[in-house]
Image (cartoon, each protein chain N blue to C red):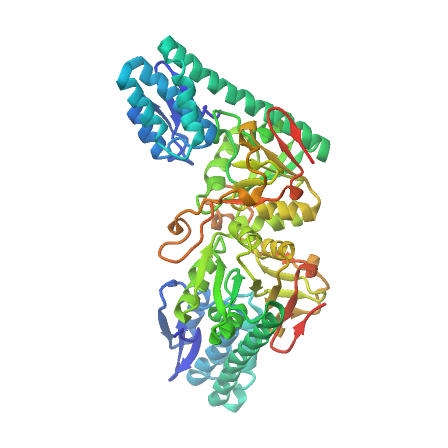
Length: 314
Length: 314
């Protein structure tokens, strides 16, 4: 069994320590500043998980502080990773219940947790139905990149939620997992998730993904998304775009599984998405490097975007 | 200055120790069994360099042994890496001069060395002329994968020979170098070669190559080849194919630079090329992995194959 990535247990927050992966170590956090530290050290990561972490952190604060002390704790939480919109959103949502007392704050945080679980389950079921329509009953050979799994959410995952929904019906042959350089989220996180839930998989270097598809070894590609523009262009972890090119050439589906919160109607197309450039030392020590964190897959290469509410095709 | 990858100096073979890269360490080898060991440990690698190593090794043997002892030394050399056709070829070519004495053997080995140098210079000049025709005078922004450079040959290189021929005329803006997992030949070898000769470069993870091209940051892709089939399909280090897909979509040239010896008229197309599957532990320790060493780029994605004799287009 894969433990929940983040949960509440008797007054403490329990977390899978993602810095310890591939070891599956669960750690408990009993006060806000421990949680702020855990968020900063990437013990917990992934937009939905960070939202729930922020909300549960406010519950911790509500049980131990009031007034200015409580407000300051909420501010520290929201600022632990300044660019993580979900974190500040989770803090704000739980904080709005503060006038009704700490139990109300906790209830709001647990509601956010439960909504994330329900969204992942809905994405998984809808994606599984779509792949059945596109590829037949299987068993299917799927290909994924990075980690769009339980470890980025509370449980189940988005792209890996689709995998797991199919696996419940014994309809997965295997999953090809790109290792996902430079931070190796595929080899370190996705591979662990699949191993724990019993899905057969093979790790490949990122450069091998496209030719694995060309050789006929994959029925469909399923990935998550960091942002989907209004025209359907998809920003996701760098290395997603070459899989989309290969899938189009091979004539197999390229499916994006992501919550509605990822859809950004205010961004008309992928050209307007700023690509985060990270430190060159993540790629190679002491040499010049470019290290874009994301790439953009144009919508004409995307078969469908599956959310908890709909299948978006064009 | 980049020293020659392999050369003869006063009765000894001098080699750039490729196991020490990114440190540039030159080592000298004075007898055949030391050389056999160096070949086995990949101190010297790359098909053309191995051919010259075999031939110079026969010269070492010819100066110190005769008869059955000489023949046994040649056999040990040829078998040091059993699948390296160039190694056995170099041994056979130098060995054929043995009846004329050790000086004739050395002359045959040095002729092979000089032919390789001349071939690389010709490939470089022809490739530079082709890129000028296709992309204009530049300065050019090129993209390469793996190491098709001096370190795989005696000096100058094939794909990197094209880069250096352009660089001699100050016509390179920069070279994007895929790190080339799992063995990192791009980050470890190509980056060092370019740094030493003063060509500006940026290393990128393999997954980033395609989107770097899509973002308009590259004028042309130039790679080497391990084998070119009769129809122009190209087998090269895994991760080459996604660059070809991205180049085709972006409408930029995808040029293959390789010696005539790489052209395999006996293999009709890429489907008949067996893809070497290497140990999974090169990718990830203790987990299931696929580790294909090569991929095949279909000829419709290849703008031209440049050899020391011609530019092959279709």
